[in-house]
Image (cartoon, rainbow, N blue to C red):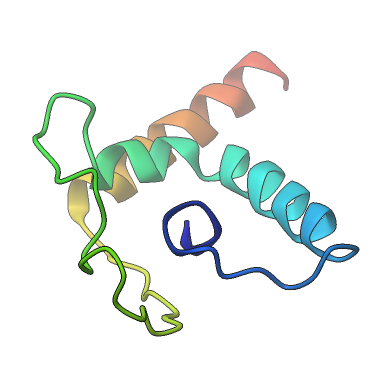
Length: 84
């Protein structure tokens, strides 16, 4: 997220590994993320800082909502029933 919007990188050799780990880690919790940010909800897509200003390095927290927990629980229980 910070790489695409603000250009914050970990370096030319480690960034592909970090990006790959982020992608495959996000696949595991995709139903949870869909509960946090539903596809039909409006969201500002251009970032939070003005162009040209220095954006700070941020480590976002993990939001906990009932809808997200229910989505992840339904997905995991469906996988358990699909592959016993």
